[in-house]
Image (tube, rainbow, N blue to C red; front, side, top):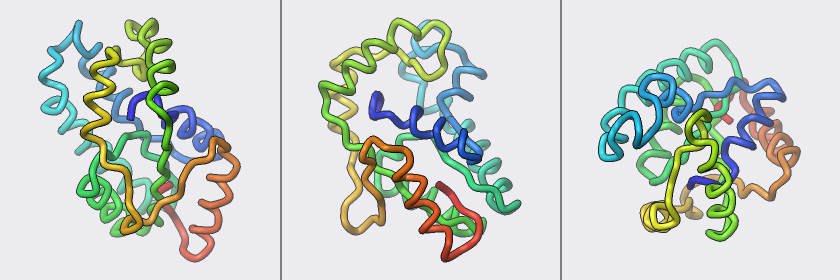
Length: 173
């Protein structure tokens, strides 16, 4: 979900040595700003080749033994399953991190980021109505999907990732 803190956490993991892959940044690099530079209705069509390219880069990084973080929303169980399979097949240890953040907090963050949308790839401009609509489409992970719940402390995620990877080398984090 926009405003949940994915990019902030992913950047902290990158600072700890993880390779960070961010579809939003690649979308911005290729197509510009969502809305002003390409029509809002074209997001998913334009995102598809970006996700294909990132999945190939991720696969190569994991096969080379690097730890990685994918800075992306993973909105449905099907999408999460696809990325989990990719990571496992590439020799990684997939770890899903769920960031449950109340709407009011997400909206406050998005509202602040909206002012940066002209020049920041991670600040796609959304209205509060957009955010509410997105919340209706997001399917949080259930007990059937292994995941950790983010408590707001990157150090606890790093500790959990170390535990997960100690049983197997490499990893998608």
